[in-house]
Length: 338
Ligand SMILES: Nc1ncnc2c1ncn2[C@@H]1O[C@H](COP(=O)(O)OP(=O)(O)O)[C@@H](O)[C@H]1O
Ligand SMILES: [Mg+2]
Image (cartoon, rainbow, N blue to C red; front, side, top):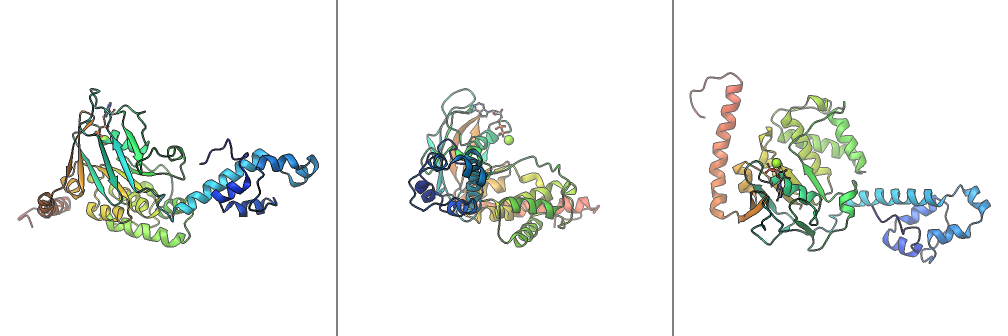
């Protein structure tokens, strides 16, 4: 959302330079302008006499309001095709729960990097994700500051829902709406104004089914999805539909989804991914991991090739555990671990 206060005072020329698509808006409103008009909306209204104003049913406040809504919609639409120019995110140290300084100065994360956040329950993992979502400016309990492209970011990212910097996949997913899977994704696709709506919806449902253990169909009601299925749907939806350059994930592990595929899907899109996790496999999939203690960042560890090497072994063990779970669930009596 752009500043409402001065849009009526800005020369039309400047407005059009910033938002070229407004030309179409003015045409629709029957307002005659040329592209280097130095007058502002206010000036133009001052020139129109009372009678004409009634004829055109023009009202300055209403016009400015609908113009802002138009800009917001167009920006949201255009944003699906660009990356908002976010190249890096920087976390500047604050304090831990005892108000002591954190044990790092700053951490810069670049596009396509995956950063994991580990630490005991209650240590402050979700808080760190919250600081990033809120683009904290020393105004949260941790006193951290978040920079985008090494700069204090525009406040619009805090308040505009259509222009979100951050997509958050959270621990708790509760659907309250009485919709089918198709209708749910359709709603989201419509609000993002995607062009090839049906194709996108089908892609999301297909991807979600690849992540979920048990399959579901487009006409499954969202309220009857299992935890794993709804998580899978949200991940596919976020990966494919969200234009947010930063994705935050809060503990997706115990959800009955294919974690590796989910992560691949999410990072495939040149995003910055931060993920709080207790899962050793996910933790080692990250490029780095942030260790949190007592509310503060205690260490930042780069995943070494040696550690990455352990992943294969861990995945094998994990597959065994998954397989045993499946067999026990279906009533089998185990005779071997294969
Ligand atoms: N640096 C900090 N200063 C003050 N309070 C903090 C700090 N870090 C975390 N907290 C608070 O501690 C509590 C637990 O943190 P949370 O992020 O939920 O932990 P986790 O997600 O690791 O289980 C929350 O109320 C959070 O706001
Ligand atoms: Mg948490």
